[in-house]
Image (cartoon, rainbow, N blue to C red; front, side, top):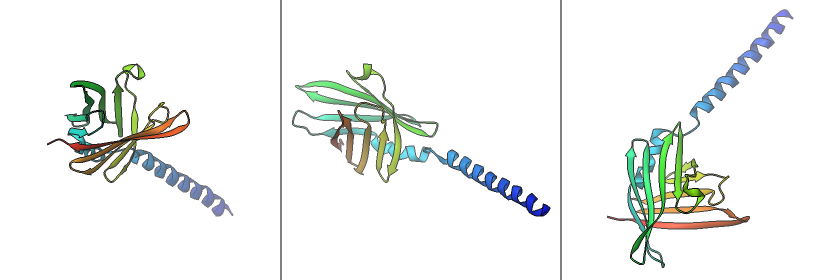
Length: 168
């Protein structure tokens, strides 16, 4: 009986150690890698979208190995109207989309964390933001970009598409 009593705590201790090490491995593997971030390099360049009210543009450049900077604007009545600037960066295994929309949020960054990568589709989320709560980017080809924003306004779902073509 003494051997069994000694055996049981030993098995429990080993099981607990395995659970702890497994949990530590899961925590360590959470997040995104530099390789994941590099998949977003397809965003670099200038993108144009045709709209009835005029053209919209997004222009992106790489500013460091772990950061891109973007600006969106429209041409309205012959004038360039800046809509927002965006920082897209990798920090502590998080990929963050940080827009500053002119005339909104006291012109401060709103942080959206990358939640998933599905092939060439990237979904960023900030469930606490008023609207949007999700921002998506999908690269359909080297010269086709589908972006969207979605979420709820007054408990009503809303989804807005932005279909861009790459400028040559």
